Length: 200
Image (cartoon, rainbow, N blue to C red; front, side, top):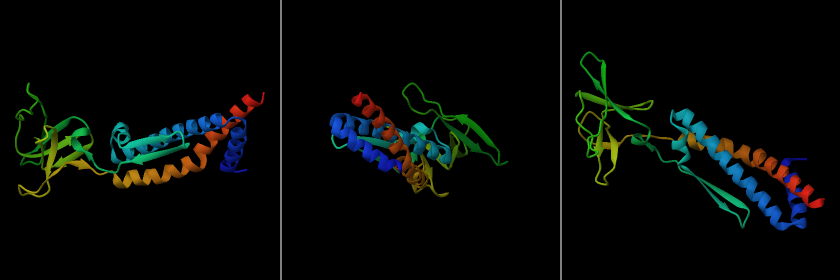
């Protein structure tokens, strides 16, 4: 018998014995399955994009509707701003094509101080390098890494790491596994335990 069919039969049986216990078992399995999906998606995406899993997990939100025995997993696909990845280091390219590296330091007021070196810059954050980039405080008061898209002064855009493709791929892959295997197996196990306990 397939797991999903077995889970439906057991849920029906437990509902006849105690409807509250049946709903509790479903919500518990949904909660654990949602967390598992969040972990798998963030881990795969982080590995592919060379980021920390915690950065991807912030994009995933779980809404549990306990009265309906359902859960909604919302996955954000917007890019990760470079400033959130880690400590920013400037790389200065010299005429001999070598890089001099200096960390970005803040003064007592929280402003970034003048770098030790100057020249054509790239900013390295974690395992990512953004060419023609610089640190700037925006009107909102937040610091960000901005990047020139061409050799000209403008246009300027926020330096970021796109994750849309990789997080969508990971979500499609793991959601199928969670729905068809992981959730039903958890639910079957919990339902059997509660039915045995109530039947004694």
